Length: 275
Ligand code: SAM
Image (cartoon, rainbow, N blue to C red; front, side, top):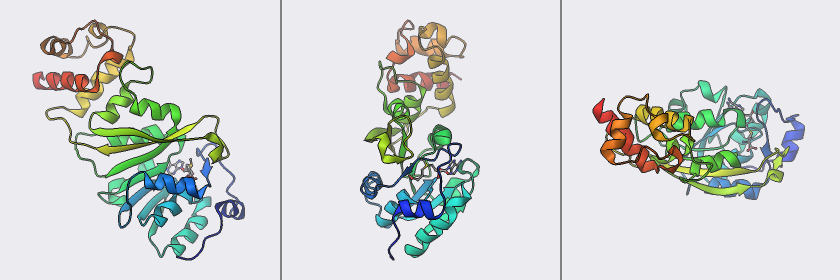
């Protein structure tokens, strides 16, 4: 590996002034980037997939950790800087120019890749929902290590009976172990965003049997669509939902935020069996 110039120099040489529209807040601190790259565990000889490498700070950290990286970047201004990284790491980096939302990611990144990304805020949740969704499980990826605004990160790992608990927590936790790996101060970014950030780490676990992801999604959408209301009201229009509550002995006067992830899964299973 040949030496690369500091990221600050790369940004100024390639004129990478941060674009708000593209959710650009760059990380330049190599120690911090190395810590993020350690979150998924040992990456030596592993595949990593990164959305939005920008000037390549996290990309370099993943490559330093020994991964082979596929990265997709929408901003073509970043491509020359990324070409330098590719050269320095003997071609262990593949860069795709384009929108991550339009890609068949399993195809480009390869099955078993660890997804590691400081996500652009404007598409971060949409990508997460896509990675966590679908009926097929285990997914094509091995783990997710993702930087979000702290408020979104807290919703992903939230426990019942807390204000942050809702659809995102259930979507993330019903067939993944999800944890908040580290908080990152806003001052670590260039330019600093208005809010704090945090890295979440999700690892797929065995999916509960007999549960349809689509049914669970409809159930949580209805239940949290009116989170202040009793379940009896909020899920009444879903076929089989009230009967499922009765069969499971779940009090229909409870509100969505008091139900555990396991209880939501049990209701969805009972609804699906009936359907
Ligand atoms: N990884 C870099 C870092 O940590 O310093 C940059 C992170 S910055 C928060 C988000 C990056 O995602 C930007 O480089 C931006 O151009 C890119 N981006 C925004 N929307 C994208 C999309 N739909 N597909 C791919 N990349 C995107």
